[in-house]
Image (cartoon, rainbow, N blue to C red; front, side, top):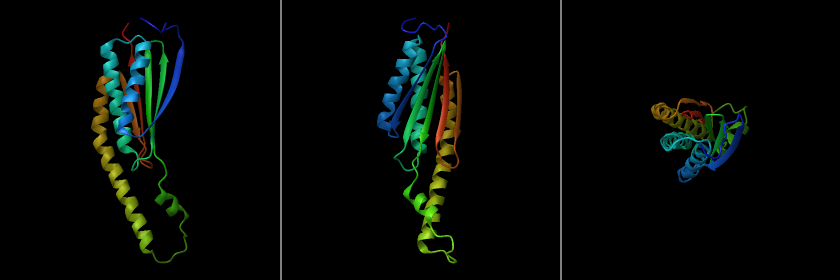
Length: 168
């Protein structure tokens, strides 16, 4: 084993990337680096990078119409590497405008109806993407020792926790 002595030391680090598929390679390289330092073998590193790529792809897919970011948190402790992948969705301009709309309008205006329609479409798209991602996220668990995930129904953001143990 090279680089990491496994003496009970806990090492954590954060990486924030744009919610853009072009940056998934950065997340994979960071995960491979941490796993290598922790003494994981090549096959385990490959498995982990596949799971990280899938988590990032799903997190990117679930961000609301782009513009969000992906935060990866690496925690290295003894023979365990835990990686959390979390998408952050920015508030949309429409949501901000809708929150400030006057409440005493007795009749819905065309712009209010359009706003409600847009929100319904966004919710439907997020729900559809969530269902489609569910299978992909379950498959991701095949490459790590423990995989847990949660989709926030309010924001559509994704939080995935992947844990890989080093074979002794």
